[in-house]
Each structure stands twice: as C-alpha cells, then as structure tokens.
Image 1 (cartoon, rainbow, N blue to C red):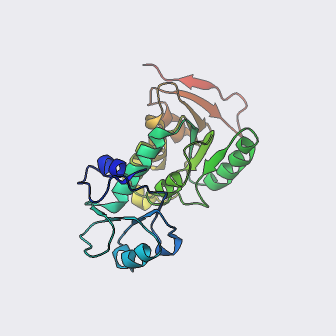
Image 2: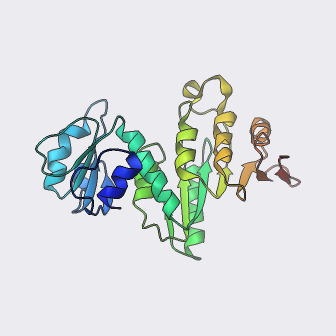
Image 3: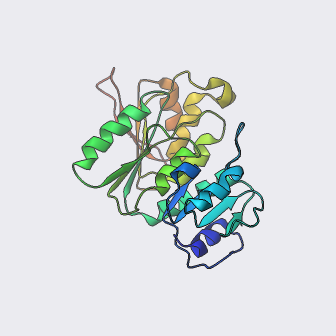
Length: 250
C-alpha cells in the first residue's frame, strides 16, 4: 500500500509524499524492516509510542500513532485508536485479495484445525494463515497484513473474550467459509449473559450471500443460535451421523 492509500482508508490527512510505499506493518520495533509502517499501540506496561524513534531508525517509513510525535523524520498518521485503525487497514487488504477466505472459531481446537487446513490446502495452492494463535484484534489484522494478497487460500482463526469481539473480527475477515468448532465454557465472564454460543455464531453474520457455515451439531445452543442467520449451514457431528445441512429461510 502507498501512504496515500493508507491515509484514505483511515480518513486522516495525508502527511508527506503520498507515493511512499509501505511493504509491511508491524507493532514491535524489533520486527521493523526497511519500508515498514510502525503501529504505536499503548499497553498496560509499555507504550508503543516510546519505541517509534527506534522503529524509524530501523527503517520504518510511516508511523501510525494516537498522539503527535514530532521530529521523527517520517510521516506520522494520527488516529483516535491505533488498534481500530489496524483493523481498518486489514479490512481494506481483505477486500483486495481474490483468495478464498476461511474463518475458524470455537472455544477449543481453533489453532489445531487451522494448521490441519493449511497443510491440506497448501497442496492445492498458496495458503496464508495467522501466525501461531495470534487471533485477536491485534494479531489477526497483523497476520492479514503480512499476506501478499495473491494467495489462493486464507485460513484465519478468530478468538474472542469480550462482548463485541467477534463483530470486530468478523467485519475484518468477512469469510467465504465460516467454521464453528464448538461452544464451551470459555471466557464466560467477559462474554456476558448472551452466552458463548451467541458470540461464536456472530461470525456467520459476516458470510456473503453465497457463503457457507460449517457448525458443530453437538452443541444444542450453538445449533439454535446458528439457525438465526439467513445463511446456508452444514452441520457436522462426532455423535450423530444424521447431522444435515440447513438453509435458514429468508
């Protein structure tokens, strides 16, 4: 992406030459390579803004920040929330790829299934995925922005722990195929009274009209929540061989 494109996507004033080309997006100054965009993310113990000078010294050509950082010598794009802006950039990059995008969620087993699918799909075409289990609002966008955009398949897992997480991740990923492995008792405190299954099923709402969801039939509450969405759903089960497809009425 060029600086001009990034400024347009984030709806912020263009600072510097719009022709500056960004070759990677990172949040850790130790991972900067020449041509990188460095994202300053404030944390509980450290603040990424403090490492912007080191990032520029290592070759960063643009900095994304939540406050002014004068005298860095490179364009600084200021936004209200750098994590949200990171998601916006990843969402834009998602819209640029022709890859078939597969989104995986569930209380357990996401990373294992992701790795299995990557091995299978890699035999068919170029495949990208999250690094390790980087599946939150920082890890997933960074992983998406590490792709070339020319892959045949993307396989990304979405991990949630708070109300609204899946909507933020789903809006970025917009999968062609959504897989919901299970809905167990994980992160229940952060997910609130709606229940884990309700939050996991939200991924289905980001499927395109021709998309399909693969949902475990072994969790009654997950089956109930999945059927709320007007999507084609293929149910699978390790307990019931008669699990069938379901097309929610429009």
